[in-house]
Image (cartoon, rainbow, N blue to C red; front, side):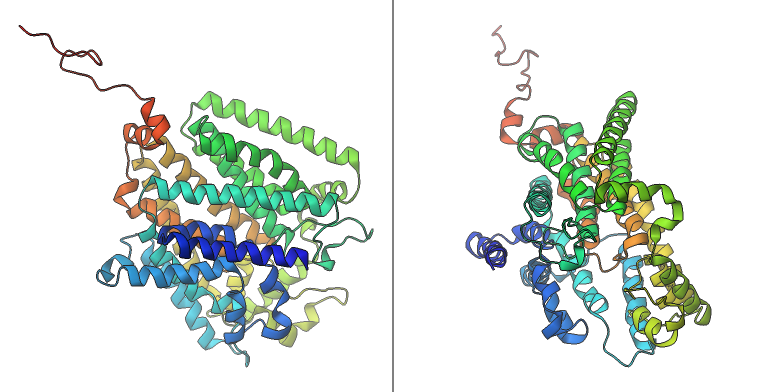
Length: 476
């Protein structure tokens, strides 16, 4: 009960900050800070269910999703006299609109007699957030608040994850206890340790990119660097193989996209792989559940384990319904009703863990075509926005956004949760802000001046007519 009271107090503090400070732009950092708090919504299905209106209400027990809803409401009220700003001039608007339209039509052609699952019901909220949130992200200061929220959340979650493994506190999901009855896959406030590992992976890559490009600033010295140290232990405590691989992928891509010298990228990459080898050696030497999970990485495709039959079942659904699939959110229902013979007797899960298979099975060729269209447009626009950005700060954040989006898509092939991953939409909203907000289109010189009052004061003094700083021209 003490842990629950602490979570409720944290959620109340987030709400109080918005009410007291009356700053709508703080809603976006509150979304980032609140989304990892999945405790209440995970414990609520017994009395609220996982589908229909009650399931949608259950989602609002997550303070981050509640903050998303508040962002939509506040944004609409704030721009009620200028509603055109609620539609960002983004090249992603049409592909994302097509994706949401296909998801809505998939509910209509679904053959399930039950209400749509919560993963589908929540999509309109995400769509509204992606539309409205960019209007609240207007300049570098807004972006730095969001970055700070990612780093603070990752630091706090890593501390909780370590405490779960070392001290045995807040072990609130009994299913995560290993067969030896003492090891616990740390999940912090996430429902699943793999989702915690994914969040830590993208946050650690953000911290690494910030340290590389921005140098010794308050953001990097007091947040990014300490978080990297603590989260390195926290992500190990999750025992998430997919999370570890996502960290490698995102970290490598952030370094590759970083606006630094090429030889520096090579040296950093070699150093990171050396540190990784040392860390893996330490984990293997320690033994236990973590070492066993590391050894399973050498098993190739067998690492997917129980997910193999889920992929086979999804493929059968697609072959039987190649054009439209079985309908949005209908994978699990179709599996237990029509494809139960493909489920082994020992299996304990019926949810798809491979996002491409989920879309293929539920939306058929139409869904795959629209998904491909979205991926292609996002890749093109990312390249265009990155190329036209000259400021190092903008480049490192856009590169991090690209790496994180790739990481989420990559991990969703083994853990699911792609379109229903809320951080996917947070990242897309931030990217659309970089694409459309004039205040974020800074040059390299403006970027240095806007960094902070302290750093601005350290810049060169203005040059006078004589060309010598601080000296007045002589009289004739």
